[in-house]
Image 1 (cartoon, helix red, strand yellow):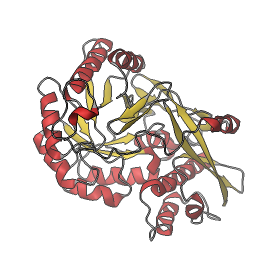
Image 2: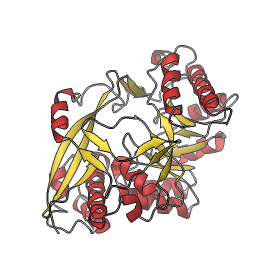
Image 3: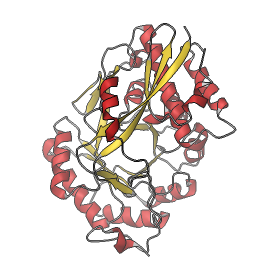
Image 4: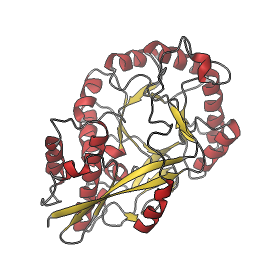
Length: 391
């Protein structure tokens, strides 16, 4: 069997409401979802959700190869791109191809990927993550009641701009989950998307911890700031989570080796092989791993096969337009199916028809860092208006 070609598709995730974080908001709730389909000479195809930036260049490392040599082909893609650099979106392209190859390998074995990788339990614990910074209190409560209806008892909120607003919103969601769980204490996390300095992080979280028990604070400082993450970890009770934007094992290593991270995260778009290697490194330091992503299907399969998986992010309860998934959501978990491979189906006609919905890449949203991010004299209190916190 040989790899003969690929198709690059782009569909949309339609949230039906505004979504965003401390960096920005997608007001219409529509975001791009790139997809790579790898083709073989025997008609078996694999699907990977991720970037396809420089896909032709990356694919040159795969063309004519046997798709079953997944991990060797992963390194071959890294070597192909080493001079120009394989970070950022290009790393996402490598991750998308890698995920598609794992899909093919499992299909050829006639097994779901979680079985092929050595998983035992198809149930993957999840937490709710609504990208919810733009929602008012009533909308926020209703959203997390919906998650709670699927058995989820932990939630990660977006925040970091206003202490009082964060405190109120976290307490509101805590109460929603307490009610749904008959008084069982829920998990509460706060994600600030690299929006603070070290001192701001300690002050902000310290204030919240006067009345709230936070499981973790996520990306409190810039992703590469080893000393900063370590300083935050020493200054707060909550665990420090980071890693979703780190592209390569070499970027995780300094944070893990320095004891600067408590919850090691990887993004679904970076691929399955990357996750497995990061999980092994974290396990050597007795650290848990937690996958991140809008549609983290590849990593949910891989999570069943690592000993240190903690919990996986569950964002939208609906798949992207034109995408079907074999798993279900219930009892607070992804429940994986028995379809060979990843269990991802594509309706390419529906994906093509969604083309008119694709947002302009230059439009505002979470992907653009504000020019004053982190440059605040003090955290805001009151209305959450960014203008009130600028120095």
